[in-house]
Length: 284
Image (cartoon, rainbow, N blue to C red):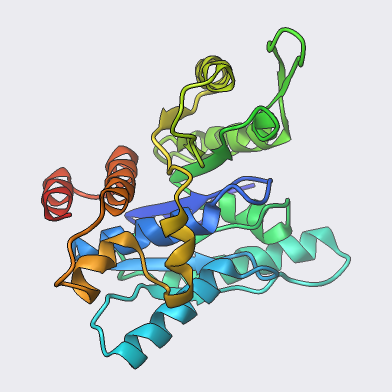
């Protein structure tokens, strides 16, 4: 497995990946992309989930709202790739790699490209991970959901062994070093974080901290369980759009908190200049 020179031409390729569905990958990708757009960056999105295409549908809703409402909300340069078909594994991987490299070449003018992946180990998802220089893995704040990272003993809550997805990310990180590229920045975030303290939350804190030290990812703040994220989907909006589309209404406490979560995550990823983040946070 070798990496294309397309990688080195990208400033940041941020892959949102996890082989489990329902962890908020598409929501995370869209909100981060729009937050970066509002800071004035050239942003691209690449949807590799051809079956669900949640990110693509979100952006279609956004473009429709922009046209019907006459609101100048910013749009990313968006592309979608369909899963290659066939029985030959090598041919499928070659086709996927060529399609991704062509898409990244089309997005060459972008400062940041956010790549959304499906919640399963498809060919596109596996090859797409190869092009990440930042990998964001959202996990739900539940012992049932962190098994994508490790096998956990249900009795004493001890780590038995890392799971397949961790092994895959670790191998990609090693390959980048072999190819003379900067190390992979692997970030795990906890989405749908409950707003109350619990024994479950303490257990997950301890498990993820141990896994981070053992496997080599870092932890960053994720997005809480907020109705506002679901409510905005139909219009393709995010909380960062609200001051623009409804300038006469002040943001509610919940909306402000949601915006702060997204800004904090974007800052933690280190993909945009810090001075722009400070301006964006103060504006919201």
